[in-house]
Image (cartoon, rainbow, N blue to C red; front, side, top):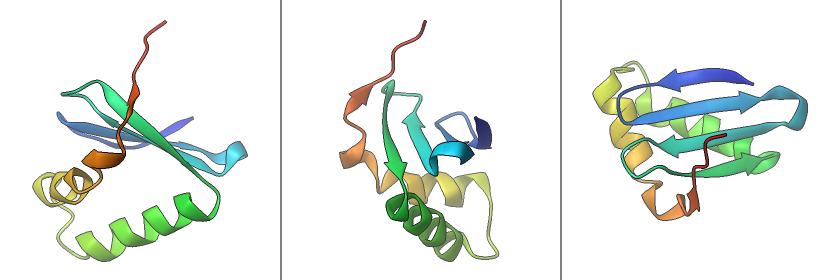
Length: 77
């Protein structure tokens, strides 16, 4: 696992051996997992949406648009 983004509101973790990404909303303790082509498309969309303005605010705003997909509760071990 490799954390590719971490803010007060979100984190995005990459799972290279599985070609997957996990997106977690820290406020609601909910997340989702993207794998394969969906994960690749997510990364592309994030790069296109953020462009040269890679501020935390801009990235969090982009990630807010995925709130409807965050349906799995985060479980801590």
